[in-house]
Image (cartoon, rainbow, N blue to C red; front, side, top):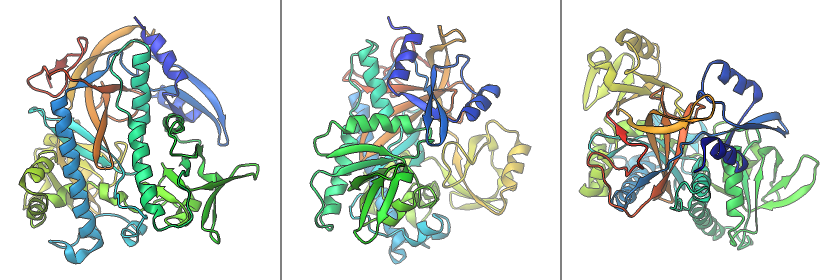
Length: 490
């Protein structure tokens, strides 16, 4: 049987890591942000200076889902994809909107101005991850939409492969990289129809700055995509090496020594230069005609949590039912938490305008519409009524989304103590459902002991989620857990 120490050492060798600046990692350790056990790490040199790669903790056991539940996930992704297309039409063609176009709530600056810019392909959001909580009745609640890059998917495939290699599982993980390759090639083939002279087998660049924490995730993806015969080459590139030749309408790679490494036909982006032009100015200049850039720029607003509020208001709700049909609309609304708009001390919820004080604060979570990585979240559950009101009242000039709180489901998981030996404890879980090209591809599961804000911090465990043909065995939930991680009461 593989020990936790052996598993964690294997993670380091498989690039299943997160990249930190040394001073940042030391600060996290000093603040006791992490497990009791310091995971294996290594120091590497980058053009931005030394960085520390530390493994992302996992548990000894994977989680499993059954075929019936997985079929429901395909329908859920279909419903959200159809909803996005409605939102896109309302936002870019306000005269088609059933109500007042919500542009004053959603998007900023160039996002609003260039929302309808044609990327050259039909997919609105090629890569989506829905962050989900499980309700008491077993249905999933989508609490956030991550809409710009396939972050974490390659890690989950690599982690699942490692579990098979080490004998911790006999079930192959979902093939995330194949799904990513299919989507970007679909986008490229459509883009190439209106861009003459582009080759059948594109030169692919995965663009990510060397100092970003998720670099190892995309290094794994690069290795996996290199095996696909449809690509002439695949390389992971720092945006500083991108150069746009406007005259030739080409995006080229020129390394730090000034050597021209050739043209890029297809770019998988991981950065947001539309929000911060200093990240990758050449990518902005090249879009959309000098290279096929996936995901499209200026579409991040489609993942705004303000759409949750708009969808539940009339006449938008009725329009969604009419356009999607009753069955698909029911899937959408059943997966959407009750949501309202906070502004200036008042809450607009369920067609009513009420005082913030009238809400039971522990039932609600306040969020910035475009926030990510648990930033801009005010949780009523972990705050006093007075503090809750003070925090939100302090945002009187801003608008926040209020979502009804869904308690995270708890599991008993195996994790290392301070000596790296196995121990068990209760963890709160959050699911990430990956939808590529509008189709469900697979899950990730994050688990945390100390916080209800479950995201990729040092104190978070990430487990692979594997598909099994066994019948689901629990009556209250969706998971078919292994013997050592039975569910606990919420």
